[in-house]
Image (cartoon, rainbow, N blue to C red; front, side, top):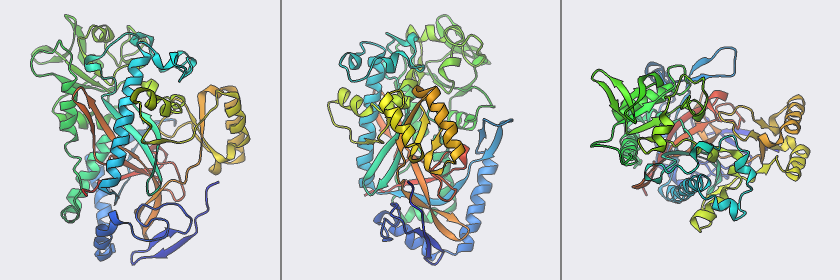
Length: 490
């Protein structure tokens, strides 16, 4: 069960600390200031609270003017909201990040090797490390990708690895995002906002930069261009359109990379190449960074009713005429049941022990695991294997009896649709509240670029924070916000 937090007030700006043994990244477990936050704390203690409150309002206004919003679905009408931003940075030491980034790189390499294997020889299944039904019955597995070798051998060009922390050196991977990871635009805008409002902090703290991500992204995509490329690779971003929840990010990244933002109706197959409409006619595209789900990518190969994709693009792709990033079929690595096998996957393809730990996971498709989950539902977190955005999940310790019984019925009806995990004591970091600083639970999504030239892990990533007191759900669609993530140079 979750510990009940008893709150006490200290610090001149009303720092609120939990007396429970939750690990706080600024104050540890014993309310002793941790090294990465020492210079920031010195600055913070000297600041006028009224100035900081004004800066928080300024940040909110800046996000509103910039149009940094997201859409909330699952209601009668889609609702557009301002994404909340908190001005207190999350700070990670260089040595902590070094260990994390090595584990992230190892995991991403293993994911890419796994995806290649399951669409080719399926050696991991033959070796008995993963049951065949995990693939054959998986809705994210695309038979159309069997035998397809993408340019450069890269399936996962952009990856987001969600991490949680429970102690000074205890990081766990919560889930992998290898299909279309989102949120990098918020990471970049968070840093830009902090640089604009508190430039003195960056002169006092040696913070590793993230602003070169768009340039690195374009270079990485260009390096993955197919052999049919003639001259400098032409890169474009494919968006479903303005009504998509991540449209701000699609437009932002296209603008930052200096490439075209296109929709399906802007593209067609011309002379065996995918080409985009321009004022000078149709221009072939070499690399398409697609933000359209597999099912809608090509109406001739997938959903015939799709108006978002490009008829025939899969035929061009299979012939080696275009790079699609990320490759179709990569969503199988996002599957939360496959996630439970990641320690075996990492060891199988790298020959090494995983540097990053998984959260212990119960596969409800297995009778013994299902029985345990049903008996302990009030102590567990239950997730849909293909779920995202915090939807369709149950946090047992925070659920009512009605919610528990409703979910119990769902589990019995479709056990293979769910996995369950113990409730971790997630670390907290400070947010700037009305009474000063207060601890809130966080996760971290570092962003990784993969190309034939290597793996590039951006220092930091997107910190998502549960702004509601006591909440463990950090998704913006569920009331969470974001904050700037600093990785210091040691």
